[in-house]
Length: 274
Image 1 (spheres, rainbow, N blue to C red):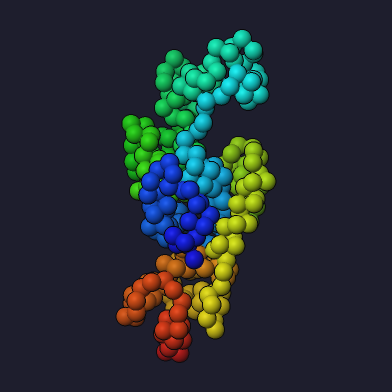
Image 2: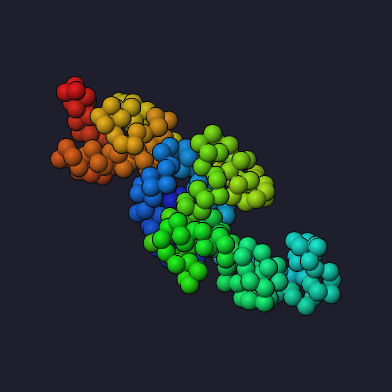
């Protein structure tokens, strides 16, 4: 189940940089994932795995550009020789403008490289990236790029960017390499992203503990008219939790999203009445 317990287990220091971001993720999960077409909890695991790597599980909410001279040479060998690296070392703003301006719609001779450095769940980068993302989620990220890290917008910005980058079809195919390439532009950190995916699948894949399993529950809710239909993959994640809450609310039960005996009995009664 996608709840605060899961977030605290996987992101133990998730609020260190932006207080409240984990609660913001949990509060937005069911609504945001459904809004952007993530019907399977397995797809949610792919998105959260990528975000976990990109933002360091909440510990790296902004791109770290505080490079040493050698770090500049190693990272951008075509841009920095020893003399130039010594001039720019440990000056993040100057580095950002040097390496990012003149591309990604960042204006030459401006502060765009710094203003639109990597941020957020997906580490969106560049004026063009912020512009597209802001248009998709309906907030002005050009005037306020830090909103990407606001707890109220953090998850939606990450999920929307995941979709903008073309990751969704690859997540649906359970292709972590394809997801990584489309979000990252390469395969940097693929091993770590794959490890994160295993963690998130395990966290969201636990079956309901009662007599009926999660796949049965998902199929039952679909028969009862769940829209959009759940993917019956046995993962008890945010889509399934939201559907259970809706059923409980409609049948006078406590809408806690848990598949307990009372909820199971109510579902079985509703199925019998079809």
